[in-house]
Amino acid sequence: MNMPVRPTCSTATISLVFGVLSWFILPFIGAVVAIVCGHMARAEIRRASGGMEGDGLARAGLILGYLHLVVLILAIVAVFMFLGGLAFLAALAHHAGHV
Image (cartoon, rainbow, N blue to C red; front, side, top):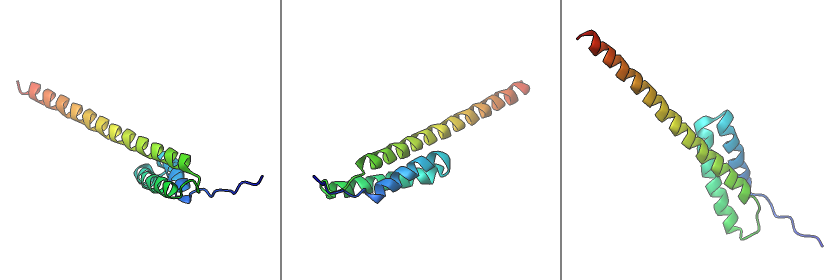
């Protein structure tokens, strides 16, 4: 029996591609594109009522995009904490020199 082939949502594919690229080439922009396209793709697939494939691709793009943003935010917080610690140590050393 021949089953009709359901098309794959191109927006879901774009989400996955940019989700992967966000980790290697396009750090912030790739993550944002992956997230936006992933949500758009999932909505499009839901509207198609089973007539379209690609929900897994969209979900993978969303996970990669959101995970990248979390790691990026944690890295920025770590840098600021490190620099703040250095500034604190410098202030302590400066203050100790005047005592």
